[in-house]
Image 1 (cartoon, rainbow, N blue to C red):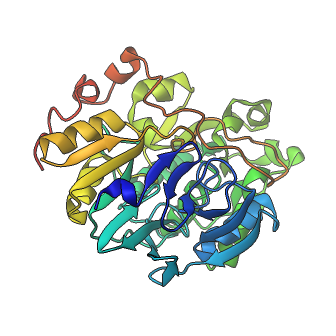
Image 2: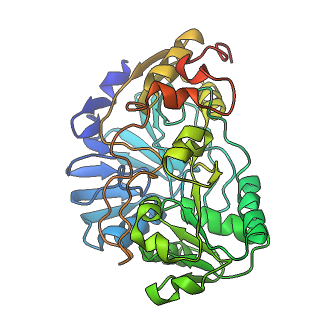
Image 3: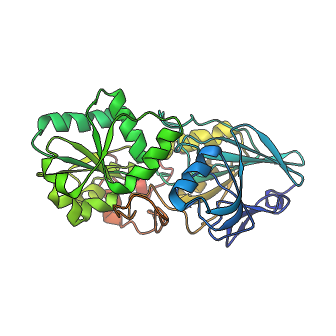
Length: 384
């Protein structure tokens, strides 16, 4: 059987003909299977949505209870028949409730992984390897230069900076769903027992995490009148808020960004970041390749990110691979998430365009190590 008999790229996104459903559709469809709650994968307006209970709760919190006509919870590991196809959801490690979706049909197994990571995250179920014949993967950090350090050690840098500059507020740009809550939890595990201050846009999702059983300690929503009193405080906000007037009202603020893209020094400088923290909710170059090998899949489809580099590596490793170039999936959500202080509502896609597409050569060359490796995909990792 051909993989295309089970999964087909369409303008609405990946489509499974025998189950008559779309995965993370970009336009409203009759039946959607959703991998996780980020807005470039989970959109409102579909008739029926199947996702993990956590993802359904997150979608309801962000879009309202009427985000779809009917919803079907899919707990991890539970098998559901859709026509002749057996479907099951498995942990992706990306954010709370994130799932890979396994399709089994006529003895063929295909996994659509959505976004995923294998690094530890105290707010999300750990990634699970699902053996398959076809593996559909992202490639957000699919270049050899992207190797993520221990996130807990990056958070320790933040605490060290607060202790060094107690007269300054530390404003941390982080995506509101997943990254912010992961940072809160890592701060608590690192011994930070003071309140963590939140931009209004982060409050509703944070409350949803609590309702789903994730303990995050005391958080306080920032009010305009309080900003001048927050010397020595840690304040989490959407990345776009760092560039707004809102950020200038804090006492001598230290601009911090938590993102895998902070691995690129030029990107941090471009955004005026004083303290870059390399904390990512996506697999890095090593984990992308290891995951492909662990699934034992013989064919790889790459949805978004650095598709060409990962496809090239697959070819050098004897694997059949192709880029899908699905438009509409974003990056870490660090770019332009709206920073309205209302705290909720419909939030557009995290990334407006795949970050690798518009990267300028000079930016890629200004790296922490091995200049040029990012432009020579697979050069230093041609074999597993």
